[in-house]
Length: 169
Image 1 (cartoon, one colour):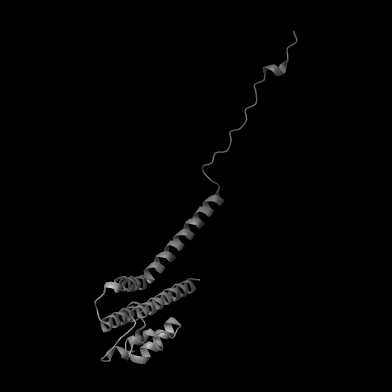
Image 2 (cartoon, rainbow, N blue to C red):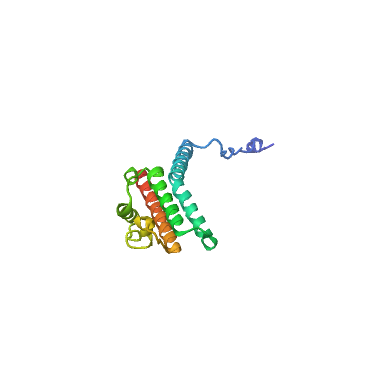
């Protein structure tokens, strides 16, 4: 009787495939770094959102004035005073540019020109925000004034965004 001794052997068992859990330490480190990066970006976005909140509020007010302009019955002096108040509150109170609190007349207009990097306030329709609004027969191009204020707010928003990015880098 010649029997094959190999026939009595059992088959080879292959090892189980590695499971996906728990991951290797490198994956834990990568996940930790990703979470830290996402946390940093969320804080950066939240601080940007908070810092530009007053600018967005001022823009909404000016946009409301622009939308209501066709059926508005207010006089030009009231509109100029409203625009002036919006800008003063934004710049002095919300953004903390304290030296502008005492600015008026040509100094105020020059400061607005400097902030907007334009000449709309000292030579354009924004002149209405200076001493001109106290004249007896004050007349202003309402759409041009509101557009001028809106462009200034957009410029301030853009420069505030750029400044925020530069300080965090």
